[in-house]
Image 1 (cartoon, rainbow, N blue to C red):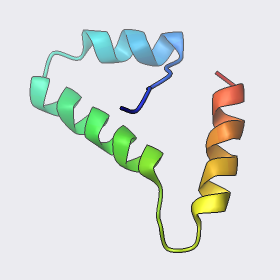
Image 2: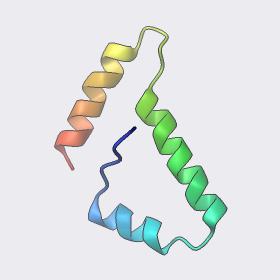
Image 3: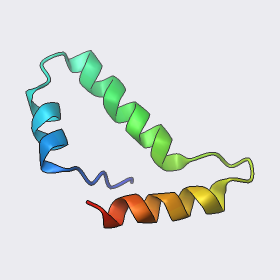
Image 4: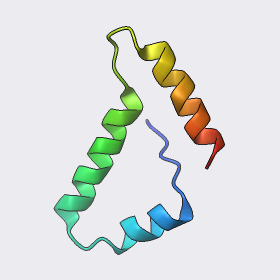
Length: 56
């Protein structure tokens, strides 16, 4: 399972989002971004994810 780490501002925005379908679409897009692209960019994606996680 993917762990989604959120900034306080994003978490508050997502919690206040009333449109259930829109909230689901946001979460699906985040999961897709977290999975990255297996077409040779995986190493770069992992490094980028680590940098982003360190800034949270």
